[in-house]
Image (cartoon, rainbow, N blue to C red; front, side):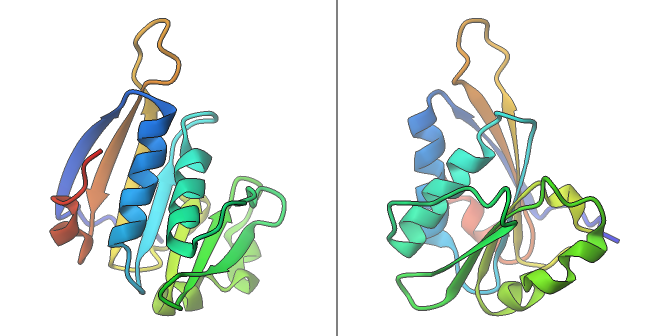
Length: 164
């Protein structure tokens, strides 16, 4: 069962454009270290994949970052040499389907970024950043989003350095 511990610290960031969402992903990549898990929650079209692609592109130095919607997981090697896993759990119906994906090993030794983490039945790491993306609600401004960041473990110290 997923840990219900309160976050060490929280921050809300207004993302006025898609470029701001991309910039947030790049900033997070610069702060990520092995043992980190980043969890992206939000409805369809809220910007999870945009943020994840920017994160992976920056941390792994790649331009093409396909969505793992059908493969469930895409693996990369960071510029620093550790593994980076990008998972999209949207199609997972039962947490037992996740056993063979290697998320636990990757979370222990590398960095994992997960879209639709509500499909997990436990927290992969105490060093995690939970990000909830939502629409800003301003009429006619379909690109405006709000990112609510909740830091756990060592992310608490790094949260203050996040700005876009």
